[in-house]
Amino acid sequence: MQTDKIQKAKYRRNWRSRKSVFGTTERPRLVVFRSGRHIYAQIIDDQAGLTLAASSSMAKGLRGSVKYGGNKQAAETVGAALAKQATEVGIKAVCFDRNGYKYHGRVKALADAARKAGLAF
Image (tube, rainbow, N blue to C red; front, side, top):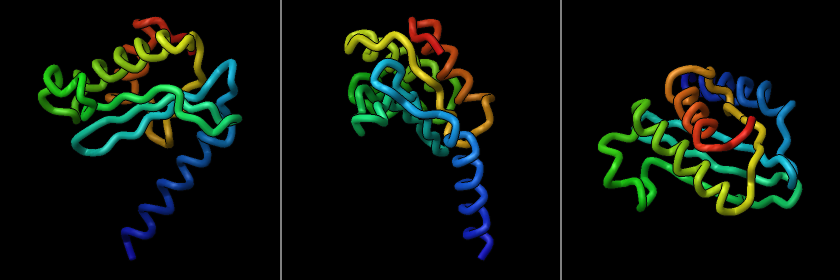
């Protein structure tokens, strides 16, 4: 019973932040998901329904440089790697979808690292 309440609250928080963010071809959406052990980020074109770039603390290229995926250092590494992939694909600007999480801690670290690596949002 309690788990159901928690899941519904998470869904409401996600929808509240998601209803105003929509990824287009010119400005796709950067969405963040975090779990207890890892952090994941994708750049999505909602018009076409495509994932243009993705990175996570479990990605093959980052496994050696990330000891533990549930901290700020891992989030910074993922953000920088995602920005690098995005610039290779030709994406310069995105709209940020925090996915119902507070803009604090790991989510903020990922966003700041992506900005520092060249993404505009």
